[in-house]
Amino acid sequence: MELKAEEEEVGGVQPVSIQAFASSSTLHGLAHIFSYERLSLKRALWALCFLGSLAVLLCVCTERVQYYFHYHHVTKLDEVAASQLPFPAVTLCNLNEFRFSQVSKNDLYHAGELLALYEIPDTQMADEKQLEILQDKANFRSFKPKPFNMREFYDRAGHDIRDMLLSCHFRGEVCSAEDFKVVFTRYGKCYTFNSGRDGRPRLKTMKGGTGNGLEIMLDIQQDEYLPVWGETDETSFEAGIKVQIHSQDEPPFIDQLGFGVAPGFQTFVSCQEQRLIYLPPPWGTCKAVTMDSDFFDSYSITACRIDCETRYLVENCNCRMVHMPGDAPYCTPEQYKECADPALDFLVEKDQEYCVCEMPCNLTRYGKELSMVKIPSKASAKYLAKKFNKSEQYIGENILVLDIFFEVLNYETIEQKKAYEIAGLLGDIGGQMGLFIGASILTVLELFDYAYEVIKHKLCRRGKCQKEAKRSSADKGVALSLDDVKRHNPCESLRGHPAGMTYAANILPHHPARGTFEDFTC
Image 1 (cartoon, rainbow, N blue to C red):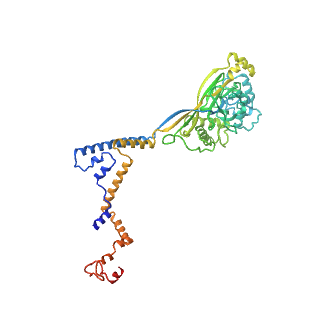
Image 2: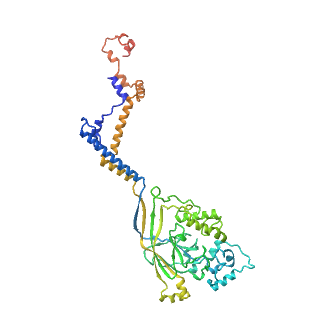
Image 3: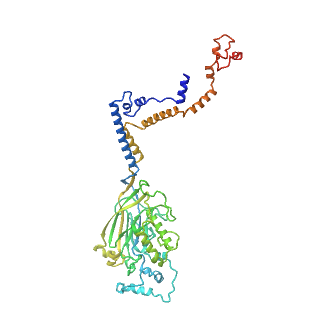
């Protein structure tokens, strides 16, 4: 009996039979496959059905796992009502960069070639008055040129908002040129309303519809437009202004993203704020980190583009354009013509690898709907001409009205969401397991537990555990407890024999004869 117990201790507790485990397992069908009955058609059919269900389960689970690792996303569109909305920044630029009357002889000396004012292919194309002024300014005999700076030239010769702005109202209240902040773009000197900078609070609107936004009347001053005798990047064939509606958190990129407003029309711009939320990789392609730039604090596509264009020009031309940030020297008119303008045109139109700007994960943009009506009407032409001391023809060719407002007081959210998350994957796998084989996570743990016990028993029977078992037995033999001593007390046996009785050594060959001392201790 002791030998058998020792073998069980060395080999470990023998696990239950497969039939006993199957009869108590929560895995459906297992009890019918591993039953105590002899092999029969019923057991074979149950085994076939179980294996078929298991195969279908594996196929379905494989397809679900593959679908999860495709990282699909869906787009959720919603409209949210608001009691008030922040009004966007509005940047506007005159399509003419320099006022003809502000171009001095020194400006013409340095930048005349850049502006294509030196050579007139056909004198009949030129206005007599402008031609006379140019001939006088282009007479450089005994002229001593002064230092020239493109930033100062743009600032001085660009259109002044104080001359352009005829009237301004925001939510019915009068605004002025002081509410517009100067900003330089590729169109030169431009102006931003509600920029939110210089300590000015960002304006809000409480209602939708016309009269609850910005309404301005502008004079584009076509009589100040530079004469166009050739095609350059600094001259324009169009008359009017370029407008961009954007968030205060991003700089204007009006030459690429602006829309035109023509003179002789009142243009209504109905806006709706759109808040876009994109997913980072691997579900999307948005950029979730802050911008690594010396010029901008927050990341946006326009900030990334301007930053990239600035670095490109500094690397290739050793200068920067007036609208570009940084501390590199401004390009001279010669550098503008020979390097800066061609390089920037190439970068914008052809080079798709140098400037790669990822989509930010959070973006605010403004959807727009434009409509126009003709101004002035015949009834108002004389009144406006008298009011602004201009001719009716001048009013029709130079005056425009721009009305920007929210259509309704709500904003639209466009959000990318994960189409299939890990919770959905686990739910699908769990549902398929329950449908095909009636299993759950605990059922899987049951199978692993039984397999572990079987493998452990097999390994121990092959001698893997004997060394540990012997070491454990030796430890038990050395550290006998008091209860063990009492349980194996030899004195109890002596009390059944005559006193002083001893055993001969040959009777118990493995134990020495008990003497008087042992009797005394008992």
